[in-house]
Length: 178
Image (cartoon, rainbow, N blue to C red; front, side, top):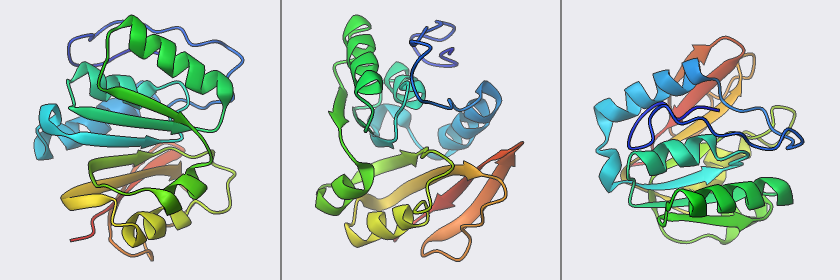
């Protein structure tokens, strides 16, 4: 896992091999950050990283000095890895929580500039993510929700959908709720 931009650009992080994850590829991550850099000042963004796994995206945002990053995952090993790596690199803006993303979304308050969700592809309730984000008003007025999913899954019928970008077997669907 490589940090592709920001203060730690080029640093390789070596998460434990036994974590139950499917990290976003460097190609897809680079494409995503090109889109985000053209739209946001990432240094002034608050970020919610759902299903953070290895922290691949959490650390990209932290390396770019995003103001606050909440990373959530259900796996104890992932949570510990992200916490220890954030501490090691002095990413004080990173807060990590262990829990079921769907349950936490129903309880959360506050709003974020960017919400990134990279759920396990086999989850049947992926389409609930945009619905819950909208219901809980978790996005700021010009905020963006990005859901990573298998390219054969269609999310274009959900509220706030704007577009999908495909990168091989993975796609990013974008949502806005103004």
